[in-house]
Length: 495
Ligand SMILES: [Zn+2]
Image: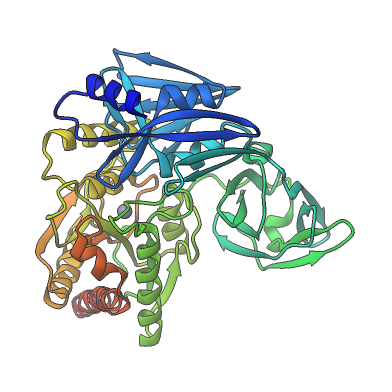
């Protein structure tokens, strides 16, 4: 222990305020140690040690400032100062940028573990309290997936080793099946396809459940989940809508939405709870996870809007599940929603920074690599100007836009002002005003869209508030009142 402390003392420059430590890596009988440091509340693990523990290799390209971790056939790309990493071409958000110090990389432990797990064909457990990283042989109880066509639809079957409870949730185009107590090896399922209906499968392992997500290539009618035995399986029967049922009709080409006229009546509201599943969002000092707070507030907003009786609410997620960012605005566009409201909590390294901000959409780009580039730039900028809110920047820069200005920028700005006014009045935390940002939303949102950074989860006082039901309720009510004010304005303007 002493030795490692000394080593770090030598290796780390004075400005690098971190506490040195180590984490025990366990795999079967094998024990090795991984150097770790803590910066603030966050524990980081040394990438090179992780690589040797997990049987992989690292390389570093000084020109692009990028490190690569290879384990078996999987490749993880890590960029200096960016919380976004790319695993086998899929982008994941670690919530915190890696520490880069004199050619060495340190990854945030809690949020990296689920990503690393996808690379090592087993289950990876990280315990911050015990200082243990444990790789277990996958003893999967989720064995296989079958998809078969039936007369009036399609049957998905998930074969399990034992009888298990499950929950199915459609968040078009993703059909998510959560299996409680489920254990799986994601790489056994990731990327599988079952044409014509299932374009892609993705698998996620959570603490107490596993999730299989099926990306459907066309809308479906009703679905029904049942449990069957001999062998044990979870069945989900999908009813094909009549014309879509013919597998030989190709999916319609993506349509140029005609919209941009603003709806005369504001009725359908998409409420987007930020982050979810493997994407934790920011994490507070008391370990409050942004994804949980976002969901709590979003569900309260849904309830309030529904109680009003004049709104139809569409949630991008209602449980702790991962919804790719790109799908969130697609959900809104497909539903022909009138407004899109995304709920988040802010974060800043300076813990005293506090308050509420509402953002509206600005300019757009359209490919993921550019999105990533912008996110990286944002992170680098953050390193230089610490006053910036990195959480907001990550959220904003990652939701993709088109090249064009959002046609509803004016309305979005109006809506953000009205929401911000209500929140500033009722929350009694600093009013940081409205702002615009280069939001990235893969599919342009064809409706006024705002993102509310409700309060700072990184500020101890506001973290405490965010955990309180009454405060969450106040936020939800403030957003609702802002929506009402906007609705009134729009509907007065249209004859
Ligand atoms: Zn967020």
